[in-house]
Amino acid sequence: MKRSTNIIIPAIEINDELLNCLKGLNKISSKNFFVSIILDKKNKKKFPKFKYKINKLVVGKINMSKKRNIAAKKFNSEYIAFLDSDAYPNRNWLRLGIGYLKQKKGDVVGGPGLPFSKQTYEEKICYYSKRSFFVTGYLNFRKFKAKSRHCDWLESCNLIMKRSFFLNHGGMDEKRYTGEDKEFFERARKENPNLKVYYNPNLFIYHRERILVGFLLQRMCFGMDFLNLIKPSSGIKGFQPILPNLVFLSFLLLIISDIDLILKAQIASISILSIIFVIFLNLKKYIKSYKDLILTILTINLANISFAIGGILTVIGLRKVLVNKIYTFSRQRRDK
Image (cartoon, rainbow, N blue to C red):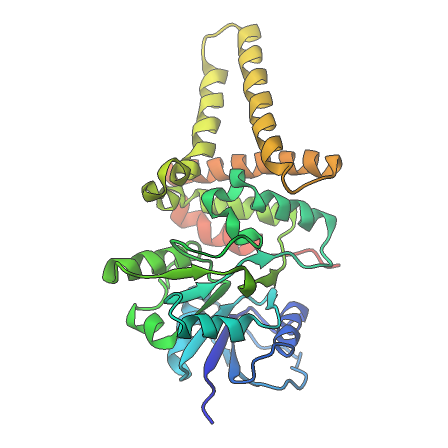
């Protein structure tokens, strides 16, 4: 019997993270699916026995966009679902997602990425930072169970759609290491102005957070793509991606200006305290511990400095040289 849904998981190799993802899929309520694992390399680890079929392809060191395209083209199914190897879905994720597609809630459906229950303290602070408007802007609803809505685009770590829809729109840009999901939706919307992308909190997955260094490097990579992240149709909120760059450049101009040193210090102090206060008001909505608040505020500011540095690297022409290497390095984790 042909399985209805192909769950596509790009990964580097078979490791504990990938096995945890597969164990999570073994618990979902749907039965009519198979899984495609697209790997860089072979290793000696083997899969335990699962209730579903696994297709395994070893394709060499290529980016996740190309891996997803390979699996979608090679294996026939009515639907495809994208999931990252460091994530796993809730029990009803696939059943509800296919249901929303059949109800025509959207051409593509997905939901938020929540942190692992057994995360480290460092990972928790990084998650709190990503949930803030001052890091992820108007798209921060994708980091918690917000109200269902139609939106511009969703992340490729949690997408469900018809296979024909994905292939008819050319799949993902295989040259991209970052922003491939946003580019896919923009390209699809040009061909189909009535495109519907549906976010629903019931379609949540658990997604492991990066450690601090990886998180900051990821923000630097996103900063290299800041011009493509601007969304004028979303009003003033859509210009949030340029805010870190403007603040960073303003401080640089202040430092090199001829203003009296004491006045410089006063301006800088007032500006920094104002920024901290605004961020504090935002974080108080979901963080109760003052220790967590202080560390999250610090991390948000470091993340925005990293984002601004990424923008500067793009302006001086170093994006193509650095972005792939930095993004790959940002995914590395410390052994526990």
